[in-house]
Length: 263
Image: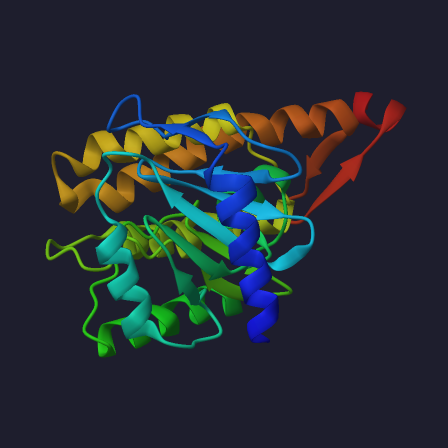
């Protein structure tokens, strides 16, 4: 990156963003809140510790700013230092006082893919697996890797949030998400291009959290069953709205429409 380009971005951050931005952390377990954001800055997203912003003149970079009183800045900076450059991760281009300038990753989260009925190829899962293995080789412990923290861009997998990769405790979210992918998503949801409403996804997410706090042994099964229970009515409703499915003795089936459905 050209030094003058980065210097202009940093100057814009200091003069236009940091001096006017009002960012607060109301509750530790809820996303931070942006009370005022100067134009033309745009908010991309917000987590429990920080919010991420972009500027139209700098489409390849984002600025991650930690809310006052929230910890984790130094830890995230160390994670980026260890990761260095890798195609599945962002990079830290500059570190200021409580903010980071990061390489922007474009794509759709797997969470949104399930909502929109966008097919997630196996290559995406493999890319993320390899990226997490790379992080482990760098002395990190991937933590809190779930459908909202990983993305797909042109059929390749990306890891968006690495802020908790220094945590020592074990985290099984990614392993369980892979089980749900191979047990439920790939054989059932992907071929049918099911679109799952966000409210239904929240039911699955909360059910996952409930089970994970109790018995990890039944975690994957619980998540899979929850997804199946949520998506099956959606599928049936979709078929009824557009036609009906006729099953034949040999196990094959065909979608019928209009009067054919009444026979």
